[in-house]
Length: 589
Image 1 (cartoon, rainbow, N blue to C red):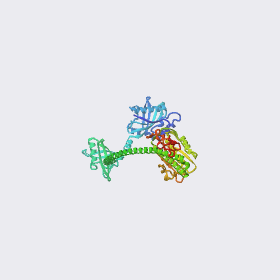
Image 2 (cartoon, rainbow, N blue to C red):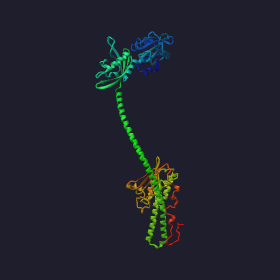
Image 3 (cartoon, one colour):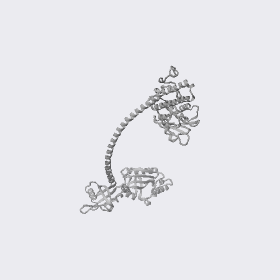
Image 4 (cartoon, rainbow, N blue to C red):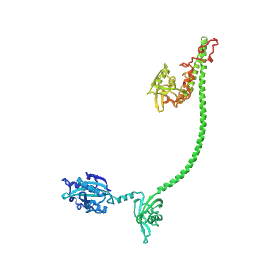
């Protein structure tokens, strides 16, 4: 079957690189200047000695057949036949149909046609390129001048394939003695890869007649292939200049000889050896790994047992801590009653004997009131600290901008401080009360510890995935680096309590509230520079706490005024003045 690969009908001289085709095409064009086709005499093959070996001249006969008037020697030699005096119809195959169709198209178009196609009519050729040119003789007789040039020769392709192979390929011709005994092999042909294959310590295949003397194993196996006709497959080693090379050999009988393929397996053998060595090492490592796993399992079991014991201890510790916190909460709550009574008693004394005592005694009585108030503040702060993180708070939508502004207005009082809010403070669902405690304590701390009559507080926020990170900054005296961790401890202040009123529990309470929800708080304050910034994280999603319900908190049952003083006294401390037996004091009714 002929397969058309390419066809060109216009500008052939510009599109085809074969110079002979270019020259023939231009000659044909120059002879068509008057609009008529050239005659066969213009392209007499006998006169075109520079290309006539590849020319064919055909005459159209019988409408759709063509007679070969000239058949070039080169075409005849490659095709192995001469078509001179024969017709295209003598090709009894699709090849003849293909040629006849192209000749007819060329005559009908009145223009040359270039084709590139494969074809099996010449076994030595895999593909051809052809130029068909229409001619016109006397009485309107139609002719075709064809130039045929083989593009690829089959034997050249086969040699290219063989030489591109990485395997050595050899054809050995059998050599026999007078008794027809096979005594040796002579190399008939070989590819490039076979030329360097060693057959002995100092010689290669191409340098040696193969006999039992040169390589007994190879000779015997190839002889068996020739004598029995059975294909042979085996391996052999050859040491060449001190290097051992290994080959897999496949041999098949070909006529009175044998075709042999040599595949270099030296690297495969090396890799197989490495694989075996690796398998041994892996086996040893597998044993060691199994021992390690056993030891690890034992260690895991021991750790699991220890973790179970630790879990029991941790559970007991949590229970103990809860009991301790509950005790501290209740003890602190109960301490408030005696404190209220003590302050009330001082008030009675002042009412009864105030006009009769000197100023020193009055100062002492006033000092008792101040110390009682301070003790009450400490107890209140301790109550708040004990409750922090253990109270279940209801959530609601909280607008931080309004919250912070309202708290600032409440804590600043008459002091000359300014508040600046940076960016968009968020509005989100959270527990309002603990967030108020944090902001209120941080702003009170900034105002209370400021060393000037006026100051500034700045509040900003940034989004950090699961948290909002708030920053509360002031322009106060700053916090020394070596005190920045200590300020979060209970009952710690940087200035004497007589200078700054406070319990020292504010920042400890703030830290406990924040860390109970997985957040962090830290100070940013540079040594020798003014200003302090507190950065704290607040969860975007508030999770319910386990512990006291804020609506049932006992501290809510006491009546505490906004300034922290008392308006009630427990019954157990309701006593009458010794100077006024039977007189019932205010607050004891």
